[in-house]
Amino acid sequence: MPQDRNRPASTLILIRKFAGILFLLLLSFACGNQRKKGHSLTASRASAQDTAFYDTLGITPSLRAGAVNYLHKKRIHNDLILVNDGSRNNRVYLMDKNAEIQHEWPLKKDIGKDVYLMPNGQLLAMMMVDSTHINFGGQAGILQLIGKEGDILWEFTHASEDYITHHDAEMLPNGNILTLVWERKAREEAARAGSQLGIDVYPEAVIEVDPKTNQIVWEWHAWDHLVQAADRTRDNYGDIAEHPGLIDLNYVTEHKGDIMHANGLAYDPQRDLIFLTINWFSEVWVIDHSTTTAEAATGQGGSYGKGGDLVYRFGNPSAYKNPEGKRLFDYVHSPIFVEHTAAPFSHMLVFSNRLDGQEQSMVYELDLSGELALEARTDNEPEVVWSFGHPDLYGGRISGAARQANGNTLVTEGDFGIWEVAPDKEVVWKFKGEGAFFWRAYPFQRDAPAIKSLFSKEQTP
Image 1 (cartoon, rainbow, N blue to C red):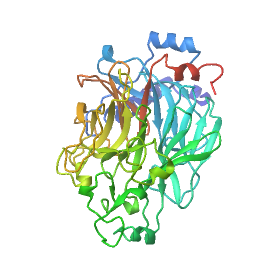
Image 2 (cartoon, rainbow, N blue to C red):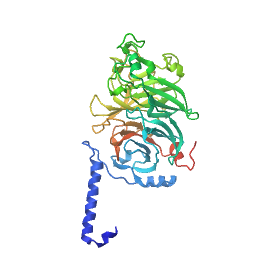
Image 3 (cartoon, helix red, strand yellow):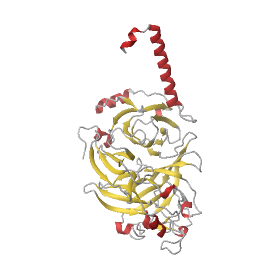
Image 4 (tube, helix red, strand yellow):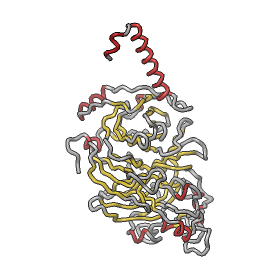
């Protein structure tokens, strides 16, 4: 600065030394010792291979998203990561394993949790309405398709005092989009259904939207598939233990009427099934998408003959009073299929936020390749084929896991950053970003269609 020219040289040296020491102390505090746990991180530097890749696509990374720790460089998979840094920073960016940002999307709205990079290079994004009557964390209200420069290519708003989209969405092979919805049931209607809470309740729904017409073309409502044992005068009176395909209306007794709290969905196109992570039930529910909307409101019809009743459920047998089977999940997020296999929809990764009530998270890989049988008083739980936990891994909210092409797993720890874990459970890489509120991180091969489309001159419609 110009005024420094009049200061003694010794003073300037002391100032610069002090500034350097202060910077190192701040970096150490922010990146190396964030928690009582042993996350150790270092600044990143682009490799020659990365530089060549950037040149190929015409990229000039100029920003680092945070700090990384290379724990075993030879085992790190050299792919790219779509980072959803929501709530505090409201950022979505694509970075490499050096935390070099290759592209960041300018967003016109706040993130409503999931944002995913489509094969055509566009983002499918859950975005928040400016104001909402329903606010449980994860509320959105707006679906958008977003171009490379942040331009909104399509938008669908679904929000009122009685309903709002939230958390997650997925595009189907036919181009339609599935998303989660909270819908309000007033206290009086809830009481007539046998609710014991005495307040408005907000059960889950799933809708399918056609982007060409902005019409809802299919829907499923949990409210149509309830059972309760509190009021014998109601039509839905019964014992959940005898009806595992139904949902216990009074299982959740807290959370201010948010009686289910779905937070993720995954679609299996081979079996036409929708998988939902239900946080307060600590379960994954599976419903039949082959039904008509009319059939989805009943317990008959569709490919599985169960209408909109649950085809399958797993993770917490106690949610339907099943004495058989081991409970796996203690709050749950992120149902993501393992893609890089011969049968891409046969295995699923699920993130359990806690372990037996303790501040310890677990990632499970589950074999769902067999018949998804759901019987009363029977062990219906799928086989766990791989799992990962670590004393330092605890994401008490949000968080998730996704498999990379080389078999390593990206684990998102919501209030820290991202881990890369090898199949033998060795941690090979860590990333700590600023703000630390990470919904999910999605890996992409460098030659994936989504990456090629993103950096092409014209994105595919």
